[in-house]
Length: 117
Image (cartoon, rainbow, N blue to C red; front, side, top):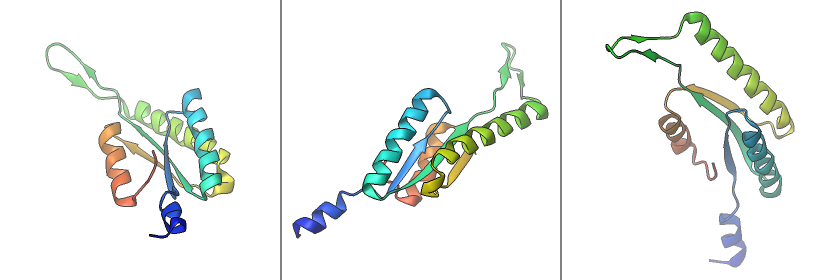
C-alpha cells in the first residue's frame, strides 16, 4: 500500500460526541470540533437518558408523571439545541434517545461506522 493511501486510512471521518450538557461534555465537544476541522470529519451530537422510576421495598415501582417526562424531553431538546448551535457551521446532526446509555449508543454507532466517540 502506498504511504499516501495509508495516511488517508488514518483520517477520522465521523465523530460521535456524547453529551450530558455538562462543562466536561462541552470541553469534549470543543476537542471534537478541533479534530473535525483538522480531519474534515462530520460530528453527530448524541444524548441518551433514562426516565427516573421510584421503586419501593415492597416491589412497587412508580413511573414518572407525563408532565415530568415532558419536562425532561424539553430540557434535552434545549440542551441539544445549544450544543448544536456551537457546531452549526459544521452542519452536524444531533440525536436523542431514551434508554440505557451503553445499549443505545452502541445501537446508534454500529450501523454508521463511527470512528471516534
